[in-house]
Image (cartoon, rainbow, N blue to C red; front, side, top):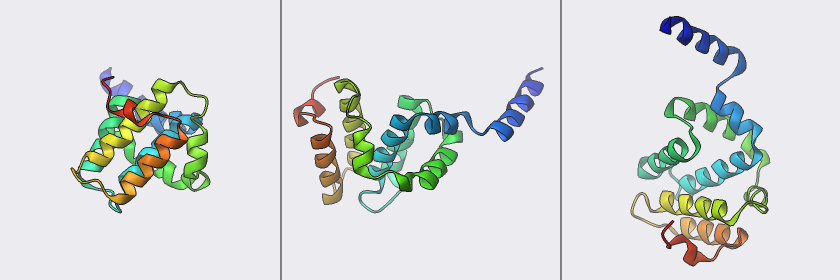
Amino acid sequence: MLMIAGLIEKVRVLFEGDPAVRRVADDPVLTAELMLLFRMVLADGEAAGPELEAFKRICRDGFGIGEESLKEVLKYLQDFGYENTTARSLGAFGELPLARRITLARHMTEIAKADEKLSAQEIDLLKRTVSLLHIDPRELVRPE
C-alpha cells in the first residue's frame, strides 16, 4: 500500500509540479523573501559553501522547503525572478508585521555570517535591506 501511495504522489507531482514550487509561486511575499535571501548568498559572488548551506537550512526549517524541492524552487526563482528587483521585493514586505521583517533580516545576517567573512557587498545589502524594511539594526542582535 505504501508503494502505491508513493507512486501516486510521483504521478501527481509529474502533472501538478512540485508542491513547494507551487507554494512559492502562489505567494508573492514568500517569493520575494526567498529572492532576497538568495541574493545574500550571491552577494559575495559565490553560491556555494557555508552560505548556501545556511540558505538550505533556512528554507527547510523556516519555510518547510525540503532539499528534494530546493533545486526546483531555485529554478523557479531564476526563471521568474528577473521580474523582481530588490526594491520590488522589499516593497512586498511593507505591510508585514515587524516580527516577520526582523526574521527576514536575521536570516540574511545568518547567511552573510555563515562563512565567517562579511564582504562589503553583504554589508551593503544588509544595511539597505534593514533601512528599507524600517528595522532598527539593534533588533537584529536582540534575543528572539
